[in-house]
Length: 438
Image (cartoon, rainbow, N blue to C red; front, side):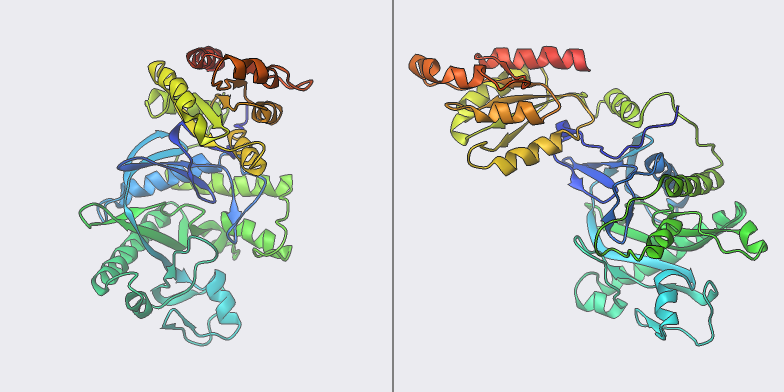
C-alpha cells in the first residue's frame, strides 16, 4: 500500500510543538524532537495538500549529509528513531541563513535579469545568462525571520546589527564553502550538480558552532541532473519545480493559496524520490502501514512517548483542587496528560481552538472536562472533539451536586459524554479507554 501522507505530527504528550512550516519541534530540557511532516511550503506559505513520503525523504537525505560532513563541522543529531524524526541537541540559533550559490538561478537570476548587478554586497559582471555558472561561488546571507520573509543582508551589516561577530562570520563563511564543495563533490559522483543551498547554524552550550536544521535536501537546495544538461535541458527535479508551478499561477506568497492538483502532487513526489534515490543509493520502499502508525510505533519503542494522552480541559482555575485529584491519579497510572483552561461560556473561541488542535493528534486522546454549575463545556467538547469525553464536574457539597448534576448528565441528542463524579474514577475510566485505543 502507498504510505498515507503525514500532514499532522501532533503528539500532545510531548506538549505543544513549536510550529514550523514543515517540521513540528517539541522542546525538552536539553534536546529537541523534530518531526518532519509531508507538508510543503512555498513562499513562506503552507499548502493544504501534503506530498506523500516527503518527510521521510527529507530526513533520510539530511541524515546522509550530516554523516558525510561531520568532519567539517559538528551537527546537532543525537538519534533518528523514525524515518521522519530526529532527536537533536538544543542549540542557540544564529539568526542568519547562509545561502551558497554556484549558478545564476532563482532569485539571483530574477534580480540580475531586472538589471541589478549586486547581491548582498557582491558585484556580478554583465553578460551572464540564466543558469550560467557564477565566476566564483558566492555566499548571499539572509536574516532568519521568525515571521514573514527573510531579507538579504551584507556581511558588514550582519556584524553591525550584532547578529554575528566578525570572527563568527569568518568561521561561518569558511564552513559554508567547505560544506558546499563537499556536497558538490559527492553530488557530482552521483550524476548531480548542487546548484545552490542554504545552511543554518547554532551555538551549543560551549559556544561551539554547530550545523542545525537540514542540509542539502530538496527543500533547502536546488539540484540538476548531469544527464539533463548533456541533453541541453535544465530541469529542477525538486521543490523548484513546485515553485515554478505556483509562479505560473501568479502565486508568490500573497493572496489565496492555490490547491495542488493530483498530477502536480505526483510530479513533485517523483522529483523528491528521484533526488533521494540518486543521493542515497537507496530505493524508496512502500510501507505496509501508515506513516502515523509507523511513527507512533517507533517513538514508543524508543521510549520517547507512551503513545496516549489525557487532555484536562478546565473551565476555571478555581477548579484546580479538583483537577489535582485527577492528575494525581493519572500520575499513579503513568498516563501523560496536558491541562488547558478555557470556559465554554466566557471564552468559547479558546475552547474550540483547543479542540481543533487535539483533533489533529495522531496518538489516542481522552478528554476529561472539569466544569461545574451549568456544564456547557462537556457538551461543547463532546460534540466537536473526535476523541472520547469524560465529564468530571466538581461539587462543593451535596446540595451543589443535587442542583447541578443534571447539566452534566443531560447531553443534547447525538452528543456522547460519560459522566464520572469521583476524580480517581475519571482517571481510571480514561486509562481503560486508552488501553483499548492503543
